[in-house]
Image (tube, rainbow, N blue to C red; front, side):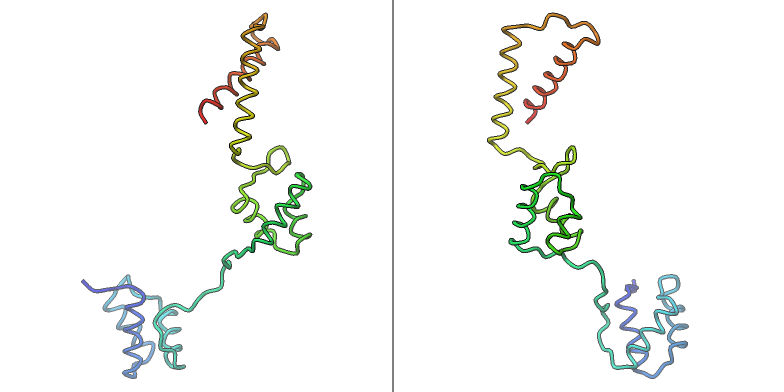
Length: 177
């Protein structure tokens, strides 16, 4: 089986061009040999031009694209400090304040710091061990209060029923974690 990868075809183009074949001849021979897997005519002509100008590498040139996000610890600390000062600050305001792009701010907030926006405030996505313990304490306190003073009515639609459902949801969430 013949290797029909782009790199292999570029090597063939380079060889045929070195032999003196013209781009149109190379195109016809490539179509004949590779069929549907052949490179497009314009691609073959472009690679022939590159080889004529002295280009020797058959690999792709690096293409422009989104640069890898490089963030320093100082920038991460500055973003964290701004968020801690004002939990309602927006990513655009942070970008303007620190003179960095909104994309980098977004990357720092979500990937590096692990924050998410809840009710228009930046909060950590995961609770720390202390926060989790405090939440468990509140739930257990509520449970003990309920056991010592049960709610009077569970009629559908009553305020007591809504409070009880919320309490059950919180307890279920805490037991799952």
